[in-house]
Image (cartoon, rainbow, N blue to C red):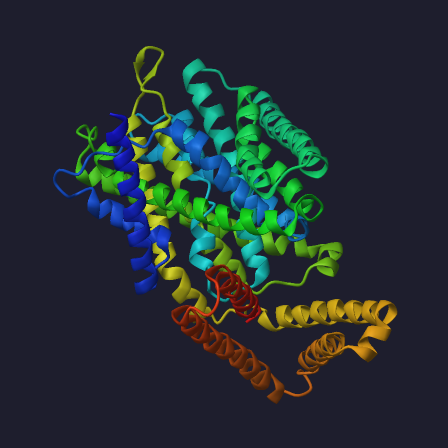
Length: 530
């Protein structure tokens, strides 16, 4: 049994890797492609049915995915966009859940308002991975990406709290608004407190204990599970515990980790998160047989009508919310002074990028089979509507988003980022140059390596100044790009020479691998600054 399950997992990982390569080849974001591929695979006769267990998603997949997202989120940018993120991750979740609740209550016979809030809590949060994966490599304003990433970090907690409150209402038959609101605040606040408390303990361990890069990396994998399980054990928000703890440790990372720990951790996390995301999205597509098996009580027309109308509601509600949520606060002078007025195109992209994902499906699957010793009413319909909403928003929005961004001609603010890059390069080179002149002036005069390094820093400052002045000299933009292209071409030439050296066996393999790693880092730096 163990061997069969292990073989199944390995096969799934292999399929995910192959399909991801194919998605790169045809230019479709891999979450969308994997969902479609999983859906098609589910139709193949003889394919084993993969039953997605909610506990598996919430306990195994969700903590590391949230932690990685929080770790790569800038606290500075997150805090600067806190109002927009809060309006989306809390306000929009409640607004969407309420709208879905009343519409589904009116649309579906026998669907109570409490059931509507259960459905609303399930389908209200956009996915934490889908939007950023689709936007990867597309030129959009940095603030748009920050808002979408920040929203996806917090909205899972909001939606799960709404879902659990509504589910409790169905089970007990009691609902008190003020008590539900107080519970909401308590669950959220204590989740943050637990996450920060555990993060402080881990801070002490990383900072003052004799860790190694391998131990540091292992602890970063233990951390999200520790935060999530602890918070959930006390019935508080595990999602907010992971997010708050991850943001805190990320902000302090420069104090905690050596360069070896940072490099090793980044590489390992990238691989693990890629595999986890891939498995999650292909499993969404593979859930079709489990979703449709109990739908005999409904006609095809009813199912399509319910699912399409509710899918459209989730899309329209988000767009309705984002415009007043963006522009109404700017009626106040204090807000206008602090923030530039965003274009309507950027606001529309935020409204359009509401793609649902695995948390919604896991929530639907976690609906109990029985309530008060009776079958949970419309449970199979919950699953079907959730599945269609995920497919509808993920595939339709995901495939259309790149073309929509191109059609709207949205500026990615790339020039500002390049200017910032020039500023930091100039400042770092300047302090390095000052340090050399103060402490190694004699060596600079007497030894060629010291003199060459001094000249290198002077060139870096000169190059940075050249970039910063390009607004006065537009032709310099082309020269800077050509210069960077030349550096990449030189790296390619060096790689060819390393291949020759390896075949000639004049250098050790260890030294050759070291030089290859140096070229990899140099190429990564150049391509990231493009």
